[in-house]
Image (cartoon, rainbow, N blue to C red):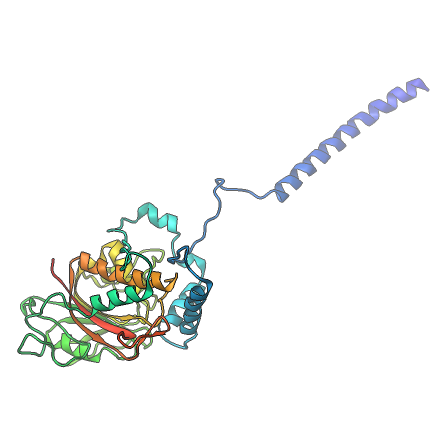
Length: 355
């Protein structure tokens, strides 16, 4: 009986070892399948970061107003608001990560927020300072296009200062506008013999058009302040929103002599991006329409902070060498939902680079 037990144990031992080994292999396989792999231990970071200016004194009421305005504009059936909304929904990989930008982007300077107009937050004081700044010309233009004197023709928004232009030199003009609101500007720049490029994403691209004085190159590309992935290809703009420097590179332009922009409330982030990446140095004359009805795309914060941000952006243009030569106002008197009889809802500002 003892001999049988000893022999039986010897025969069962190899089988037990094989079973134990099989169980260990199965356990290892389960661990591999269940535990997630990590590439380098780095936490995932958001691909797109919304920029906003928020202070400790921001009230839920003001933040809700900015959010509501954004939803109203994005609800339009056409225009740049819909285009930017579509661009954001195209996928989170459409724009570079913020940390990736910081690793290889060399910026010109950071936007400096100006001190409070009255030494402390005051909406009325900020609006008064902004209004005075954008309605007071800083230099006099000696020659306006179509005028024999030192004053622009009429009081319209299409005022082109040509006191330092030389007909012997070729000039380049860009116009960013929707629905044909830049007709006067296009005719004016064509009359000077400029190479004119018109950007309007709301219309299908057309063949070059114009009079015997020149032709207009039509593009569906639109301005953006964000950084798309990849590099622009010379001659291939397409319809995707792009930064100005990418558009200029695609068209082979080192500078733009005169640029007109009516960006439907995206002008604040676009101008800020030009301050940061040095694009302002590539523009000699700037005609831009600013909108004050709501904060603007990706601009948030309390109302008083928004107005100070607007003033800081325009002050950065001055610090970059631009001087205001002409200002005209549009319809309405609404500033961030406030009806202000002495201030208008929009202004078209003409700036000339002095240095």
